[in-house]
Length: 433
Image 1: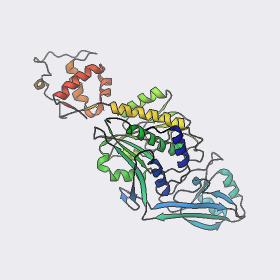
Image 2: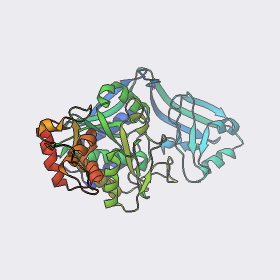
Image 3: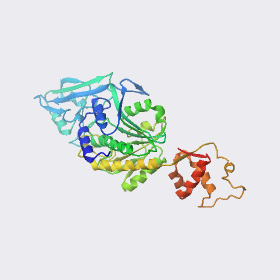
Image 4: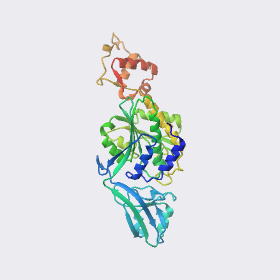
């Protein structure tokens, strides 16, 4: 069943004001809403669980936070915009001067109207984020200001995440990951969450799926690390990943390449982007960004790409209240969906073969694949004999190189290659994976 534009708009409006963080009721409420569209399993990690060098933090929930002036007027209110509260702030109620408050106030120096997004996940403190007008008002206050935050830390709480495993003919899986921890910011990353729901819905409709898919909705960084720890063996069965983030902004499309830029996933993405968006940008893999650096870490080395529309870091509204529902367009979510769906279609058609015996070439004469009389073979520049093609396939088919890459390398017709592939498979020299 397709998900209509109207339903997507309703979902965006419902999810946008929810206070999300790396833990808390907002994440659970978000995941519960997504379950109405796809058969998502909501799972959890206990607070305090050790995951590699990290530990899942106490569950955090905030219900109220404000700053009042001496007349009792609320100048800053978490209930109006949850970005006003630094995520993971502890409870406080006191009357303080602006001089003391200033240490706990953040504002955007470049844009007077925006409220910045700040967090303090692993250091117990408190803070507020304000626009410049609010900052100037507070700064001008001669009297003490009343500061109030009501929040709870639960050491027996949980960090929730969503998981959807879709089986295909291949045991090898493709990872699709998006992060749910950002509150009240539309492009980063509500757009990614909603588009991943749409993409999962499209994959559900594929008949006779070739690939298996692992689709996860997690808190960024700690969620990915915890997920990798829990699924360490399964994650090693994944070679390709898509991190879905910032897909509906006003700027250009872009591709952030995987750590191995020669991997075929990059070529597929470029081919698709070239057909859909002529002026897209390309960024090499970089350690800054999202969870690709967890999935591509030394223990996993998953080749993970991201295709964005107004990529994180690259637009002035990034990590501020100006990244709101007016900054994105629903039509961009569907356009990004089309691009990701084309990538999935390419991956479904992808052919990869592996040599059964990887140590040196097989004895081709034993399989009637070598001339009966040796010594007369001489390569011809620009032409490939059947033997040439066999030798190239034996050399290149390593279980990671796609047949499209082989064709790019040896420049022959696909139909000619297919005939020889069939022979090599029948003779148990190659196997399709």
